[in-house]
Image (tube, rainbow, N blue to C red):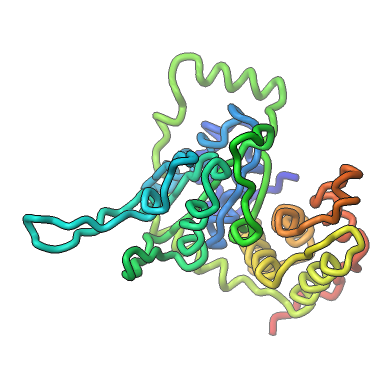
Length: 319
């Protein structure tokens, strides 16, 4: 589902990303929704489909500082957050910032490191700060984490715990391009890498301003009621062991606000919620064993729940 984006600055960013990510407008839109909602993204897909290129193109398009963390089994929490070392010259401890100190962070193959190191991202993703040696430091804004994991390599990996998964606003797949799109990819990469020529089309100040605009998008009471009804249905579903938490409901509301703004509206409609619910709710649910064995996916269950819960029809009236 690809919608016509009407917000001028967002449209400029998306067109810029399109120069590098051919046929991936939907993924670019979802990534921007997460960024503008002050959330984070988990990309799960096979190698070589452009996960790293997507986040680099996003960072380049807004002139943001880009940091990449390659998660490996021997990575330590201090390798992510930074550490304090004693300076003989200054006769005091000096903080050496880790790669988490940036605007756009690529957490590559996050499930290849230990849960202890994975948890080093939790404070930054939830509170936009890191605490090292008892000192809390605020992170640069905007702060956005896009983590990747490979679904086909299970040996030597550590599944993300529920607390970590819940910190990601959206989870999505890149998918393979269509044959015609892949031909265009080959042509664009024949002589040089398009990402090397990508120039910023927006500033960090503009992104922060849009984030503030998102918070002002109106969410009618019946839209909030609709989100809560969907979340409650996941908690009582016969195939779901653990349903969506209130954090998930908040995430769906914020993402819907961003989607509304992207489409030129200052209010949320049911279509925003319908579009985003599988991406927001799917990774926050734990299915019962019988559902897993039958091959049912969490996203399929969310889609089924969307079909069961009545859609609000009253016109939007601002409070």
